[in-house]
Picture (tube, rainbow, N blue to C red):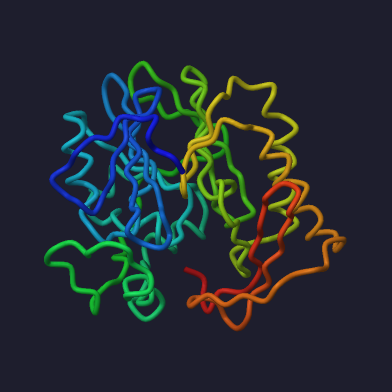
Length: 292
């Protein structure tokens, strides 16, 4: 992702790179860790919504509070570890969650060190860890969420309405946020401009394909100019949704058969990398050691 077109905002915490984006949104990027996860701080007139809380390696609440004086609420795009790491820094009453047993369980339980220790080892890092951070104790601290939301619900942050779309596939609790007034769709992990992960049991290939197809077919009827993605960067080329849908459909129906073996630390056994050279889409298919 080329961030040079956007204003970079300096923080006291050097773990994060922050960019001011169109539509009164800050991208809070963690470029020093292999997930390249991005959380978004969405500003309204009365409050701000923090879309995901990152890996938990540094203090995202402190970072967000340097960017705004507004009261901050949290909503997770889904409950994998690299999106909920800072939830415990916020009061439960300020944490929204998709209304499902999966979300409640994942947020309440957190993730133990042994499942994510590789995320803070040398090969997973490209910058120094924050001062005081202890890799040997890294875990996602569980915290029960407070406010359930469902498909179609509206979150009002004052002069700005954010609509919740349930978009399962990558995970059963996956959601997007539609910001009509600013022509932004916050995509979570259903789509981003990088390798897409489909890791069973959280992922369902057939459901993933249907979600992407619905998005690709219906996106033209919505006021969307920007896809603010939770990994790697942001996108203006909406045709990529159709390319991703076609690729995932070919896995779901079995017409795509050629792949390359791949290995990832948190996967159980070998993974399959399916590459679609004509569109640049790549999908990794495998199985979690344990759902995280």
